[in-house]
Length: 269
Image (cartoon, rainbow, N blue to C red; front, top):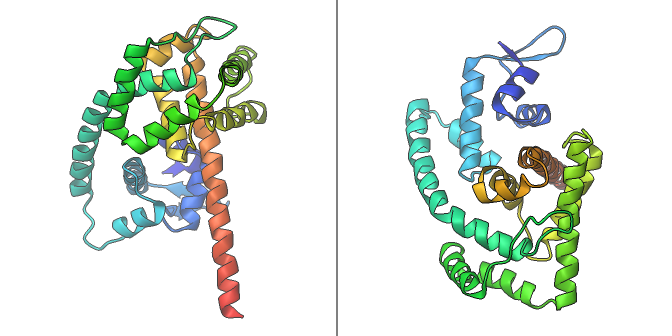
């Protein structure tokens, strides 16, 4: 049996997430002790793994619950299906990674930081190649919107935006150096500034925010550049971004539940 903390540590999710999965009957504890503690067995662990797989491929929680609660749900078949999807995703991500790196760096980090030379500008010919490939991968509307938004700024505005972004990354490196946890309120406030900063370029979804955390951590290009500020910065940023997105997601879930409760009350009146 696993305690809720042990299961959270194994799976890399928050205890609060497991509590919420219990509340919506997506992942119930195997048993609850006389002390009120939740305990989970291996079957629950495998169910949580399936939930995370389905989350990874984009299903909403209630969709996952509907799929997994089907009488004919088969774990082995589900794993085979996940493997096929993930293999396709890996192949696609390998093709995208250079485009994502280069386009993101050009849009939000084109110029070097004042603290250290972190980002280098791409030449005009390279930029045209990156934009053309990004349009093929993401669709022209999304990329064009970001590019046009950036081009709409004056040179002074662009410099101010880049300076602001550089300061955010510098502040994160300083917080890491000072030993402040990435999940602390102090550092989470920096990630809120980072979130707001991204809005100069596009409106990021929660998936995009979490994906950027993975990108910073996994991309050799980003890691090389962020390592110049601090060798552990990408790990620190991924941890902090995951916490930030978890909090936003949990707040959205609570908002939706509150709306449901309000609607139910109105229906009963």
